[in-house]
Length: 402
Image (tube, rainbow, N blue to C red; front, top):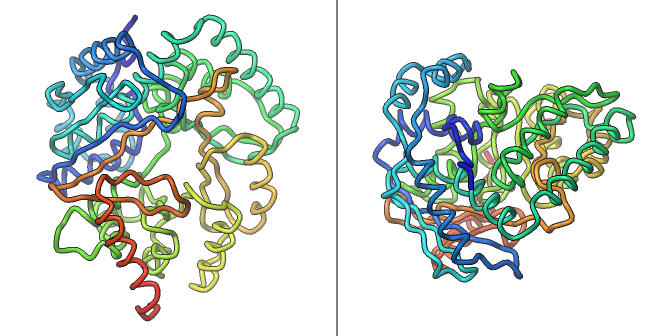
């Protein structure tokens, strides 16, 4: 199989955004990551596992080119010190443990510095996804199916059948293939729309190639590791530690905050006037999006902030129909934007993979996500999850509001 990842820019922008803050503030942190496939009926063959190993070895041979570094340097919030670090950086195959012993026939673990292991998540998932679909199915048929559906999607946006306002493509980790994602981004960029605006993509490589905006700020790992990786921290205050470190790094730049790492209710205890003012908006990634949007609008209004000056970014399992309904519901009351992944980058007759790679330990200590819906966490220690839930519950029930 041809090499899947051909550039170290072929990842989500938020990996670089977090990477710079990790480099400057937490360079000694270590993390453990674990791969999981949530599909019940998916099994990876020995041949697939060997191809995945081969592809990850090729990925680990890559380095940044000067042209790529110049592109990153041109993004407002990246600093010369971090770009210079990336000039020396490359992935280490020694940080990976890959075998066919997992529940689905595939086990992948990464261990090492947070600076390194954070960067492996997205390329690893992209490799697993593409290897699976190319080796499991008649790929030419899948590709034709994908292209036909993409053409119809673009036509529906052009006709005004769907109205999304501002939206971006977020599909690197679960794309059908690199060529499929590129086809989608190119088609979405070249079309003219009635009531929608294609802003850009989370894929930095494609943003550079097609002169689009690279989109992305922080992921759950940021709140989990900053808030729970220091053993002295009360994990119910993970959001405060994470927001504080982000503002130290970026000030008012690069400011979309993720709300659901340890529940949105707990997040709002720390997202008070200073942070709500400094951050340009918030991102939804679990739970009922309408309830979440209403809750955030009320929160901004309570703080005396006009929600229309802030962005509600929705990114949880969206398609154009759901996004259109959300846009119509909120568009006159807040800024609204969408990050749409699998529906754009992997929509075919074949069921998409639901694969994740999550941080499970930081500095040797368990970390966990307690999102707004059950089933999205992946901690290996049930006792720690219970402890974290009790910390959150105690804070919500006993701490006086700020």
